[in-house]
Image (cartoon, rainbow, N blue to C red):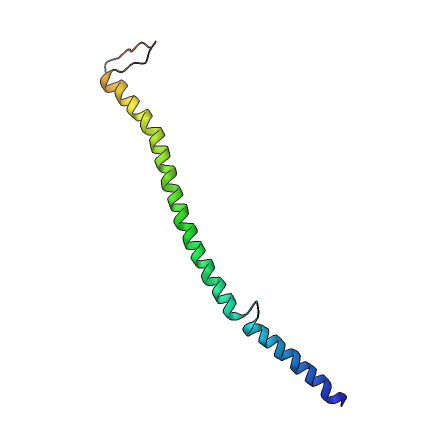
Length: 91
């Protein structure tokens, strides 16, 4: 009888481990599903990162744009600020 109990227990444990591999929390199907979700999330993160970069570039352009407008107005139109003296040196 002892000769049959040990192999039966081992076979039962093997069946449990095998069932866990196919149907449990860390099953192959579950891992594949999680990998697909991970790929989707990475793609979404990349889209959001690109969107953030565009917005950041727009903000920089707006900040620099005002300085460029002021510089052009000073050089081409002779704009001066209050309490400022404009001196133009010819080339």
